[in-house]
Length: 65
Image 1 (tube, rainbow, N blue to C red):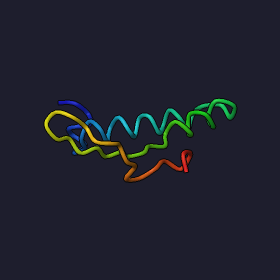
Image 2: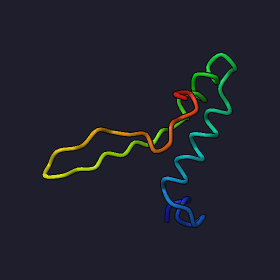
Image 3: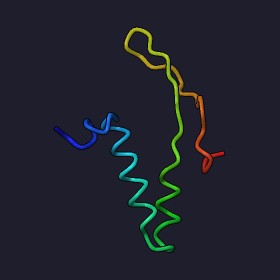
């Protein structure tokens, strides 16, 4: 059995933990750009008849605000 399954977490949670651990081990000059890429934004577009409407931000990443 996989370590993440036996720990009772999803693969996505496992991948996020690994990514956070890797970013924390980077040297300072590489850590800041890596931390900036960690920001996520959420967009929403309503689809009707196979065509998407304009995309709107539901939650913007801190770097985009």
